[in-house]
Length: 360
Image (cartoon, rainbow, N blue to C red):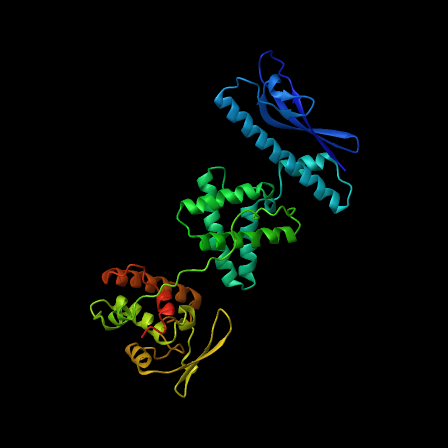
């Protein structure tokens, strides 16, 4: 197997900083990689091949040397991983190939690029929900990368527990709740593990020090009198507010039916005085007795020519999922406004109907 050494080359000009370089040796052939890192002779331990910080080093120089130590650790770790990967491939490689791979790694050697390619692959095979989940997560991680100002992408070799803890802290500083933070971490971990499966990176368990569990959420219930107040409001002056309120109440009447299940309800789901449907999330079959308030909401809206029960997916020729998501955003936006109008202490969303399903 190849070996790696860190060497120091003195400057030809006395009093000037010298240069650190990496020496890759394989089959008695030695090749060099210039690190570009400059240090003075008294800052290098020739016997242990490592940076030392002399006494009376200034604060700025001290920070510089500490950062160089970190960079050297990352560089050498990456070179060693390349050597191990080449060794595991089982073919005769050269020192030149190690250096070439280190200097210009393939696109898939970068985490963000790999994730973007993975998302596109999933989209092409129809994994739409997974595609959306991963896209949302990756966009968050890209914002973090922009915040760090160290480039849009990052090599797999630099994906470690320190980076993930830094990302977790970034999310917390932006008031992202623990469950949402965990959601992003679990999705990033899933994409990272795909790369491990493809043998693009050696498993280092970078998520071992960040939270990936699920906290029990506080139920967003409101008093029954608030539900009645929402039900009885005259919203005829604002059709979009009325639409949001009606869908909120429909969810309430149907024992907290989720918005996605409401969107995909077909007229054929309603038979013999019962609404029968299968939950998208769990595939559980549910049966609900059809009541007068539900029918009153249905009668308010023209769904002639549509196979859907509610006016959420309106165009059978257009992308149904996009229509559902657009309607969900509109409804939650209007419900928030409605909640503010009545002085509700918590944001009014479609989830509130779910947690109040048996309130009145």
